[in-house]
Length: 228
Ligand SMILES: O=C(O)COP(=O)(O)O
Ligand SMILES: [Mg+2]
Image (cartoon, rainbow, N blue to C red; front, side):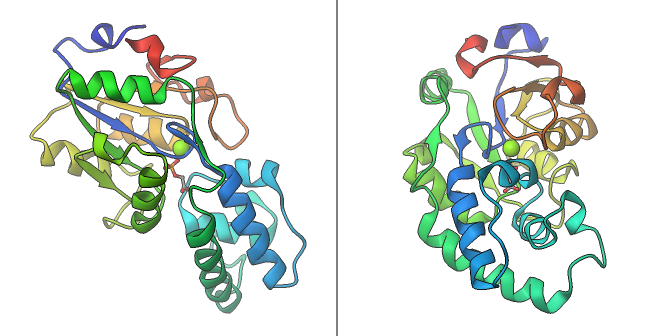
């Protein structure tokens, strides 16, 4: 499906998820997570598990790794003291690793350039912490494409809550009629549904081990250039 087929009005704003949508960022996250686990004398988790756990922000990722379980971020599973120490260790390691082993997915740079040239506004709406979002965008050389980036800790709520999407639309004075969300996980689809915006799913990212089709985005494309 093409961009112009998705909305009745011309697109004025595209909101992008970051991890798993624009950037294959798990290699950095997995290294930082394993260094954190090693600091705590726990067995390392590796890439595969990190890939399943990423998507609900850094605190959830750290809790899942500590519990070695997807449900680790539920109340009462991980004790507060261990979590606080682990989070500090993770942030320390990730600040060093961020952007070092990550790469842009195929078609991302071309798509962002074309959309930028067409005068359509672009924003990042991620659950990744703000400070690491800025750093990753710079390392990937794509920060200049975005007029706004909202992190998982920028507002009171993060995806799947619609708040970051609604905040972004308001910022650009855009509405559901001229705005599109693009993401790789059910959190993106749920947030878009709750904000009543159309959403494109990408199949190559991190959707907790499930195909993105199971979250029912409006369409799925194999890479972003398919939308051009
Ligand atoms: O850091 C995360 O948990 C995932 O971030 P995302 O929202 O860009 O996929
Ligand atoms: Mg994602």
